[in-house]
Image (cartoon, helix red, strand yellow):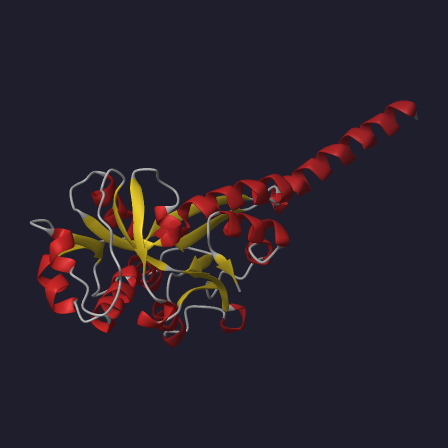
Length: 254
């Protein structure tokens, strides 16, 4: 009887372990490049707590939305603007009732860390003098959210006609940031949270909030991917623990 009981105990233990493994899942999260550092930290905490694994694809929101449209198997999407989430919603590619506005951000003008340039972002400010013989880096306004915000802000300040022909149209906000870090351009326009993660740039000025549309980060579960694990991570993104991380990186939490 003792032997039988021992065998039963071992079997029960193995079944419990197998069930635990079966419940663990791997999530693929598509997220705007500006969320890289914060989400990597949040993912580690979530993995330790839940047993699930989180894998990320970071890029421009436009690139990720197009990939989802083409059938990429992501469970969640976090965009850096509402337009690209609208794009997926119009195509019925997100779980409608899961869409939330998760975060906010601000737009800044950055220069290499050793630059002494000072800028007052008023109407008609002297952008040409700031750039000298160089160019201005930001995301491509044709599709990258930070570039759209930048175009709106520069238009509002009356200097878009000067900026447009001298624009380096990067494929993401982080690609634009790297150009400034390397000193390949004298200035760039990125989010304040991107400027905060590197000592190689300095914030020369912050664009007025009314110079562009509010910078918001919507999040949603992808249609057909609404699993328990996806819901668990979606819920964790709204937790106090995640909010603390987002705030530490400079995001405002909705």
